[in-house]
Length: 95
Length: 488
Image (tube, rainbow over all chains, first blue to last red; front, side, top):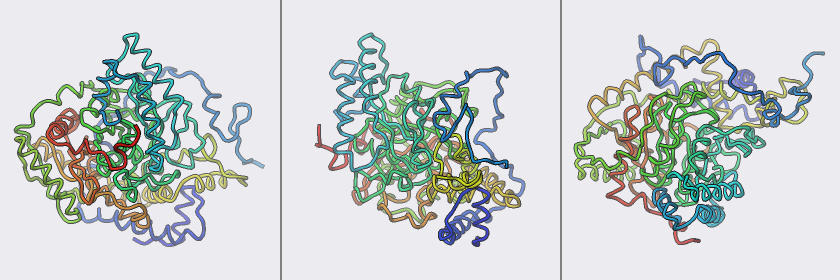
């Protein structure tokens, strides 16, 4: 499997990662070699094999729909790059 | 003092031979000298440690001490520690002060353990050499040209150099066992779900598990007893009674059936590692264990399978780092998309970006069946191999890693060759089984680890089997030259 520059740019966009133009050939090379490794899976016939998502076949636990946490908004917002009046600030999105 | 195990320190504290304050001071001194050049720590929490040590001494004088009260510990910087920087080895979280503590941290704090600091690690636990850390590589105390392994490299190096009597680690594909092997210490990855993942920064949620990194199996048993247990805050944590892991350590291993998978002893295994592992297996034979050849026919699929499952889950988990709510934000974003892209592009290192991109690709429209679904099917085959093997044997043994520690810089240009250093450990995570590594020798002056893999929730047996070996050998007592005889 060989990824070209356009595919690398597309994947980086889907992942919302800015990558430098000059780094693209390196990504194309290393990602392609990882995909070559991954494609060794193709050597095995898995027709009819039930996919395994989790080590145990457990379903997710449910709990009563009750409030269990106290509101700590200000405490948790201390790590935010920019806040104002309890809101996270980002660049303007609507003209 | 630094040569004492946790069990010995516990005994000394109980008898009043020394205080936790004295003990903590010794370790804080050792972290600076002789430990400074190893780069094991991202944060040293000296003041908090001294406060905790004095509090532990007060608890003891009030008659409220448990077996771990007052014993120092180093925590991998992947565990959130309230009020203390929790970086996960990344520029992305270089400014992140955790607003709460992980369940593992809460439990060990409640047991009276004294945090010395936060250990260096591969960025977001993605690496096998500790070279992907934003804070620079950690060195191996056995040979400072060598890597300590990863991703829990700082924890492994610190315990090996006696900068901490014990440390926490996490293991997604071998990140406790492989550095334990490369640094000559004991490391245990418990069964998936045995230890809470709450507050442990997520890499691949169906694989991640926390465990102890120690000098001896007995120490690992003591600490796991405090770490493990049900936590309603982790939806995959298993609600199952926690035994006293120290209770069964003394059971003789006579009659133990040890399975040796042919696939773990074939091509790609260094001869020095093979020799040390064979010598350890002979030791088990002398103790009355029976060696049985087995096969894990699909184990060759584990590295390819892992490099779909883990990146897919990481690409999803790491989408939370967006420059908005916490973590790194780029300068002067021109719009929201630019803010996301540059914050992530500048905040993450190369290996993390590679894995996010592989995962994004594998999950993208049109590729899901070929990669992710296929990998989950291979995962089932790998897991079934173990299930069949445990119908015949009690434990499985083999090398932890195919070679001893490689040199810093040796594999950084070739991600795939780096990935292959976890070739024997990854299958265990995919199956969700418990696995250990214990030191069994040196090759070219660098440590060799024996991996012991157990059936689900058979940590007591793993610890027992490891302890019985440590009773008749002294590899776990070897101190790297240069870290013995230094102060104090």
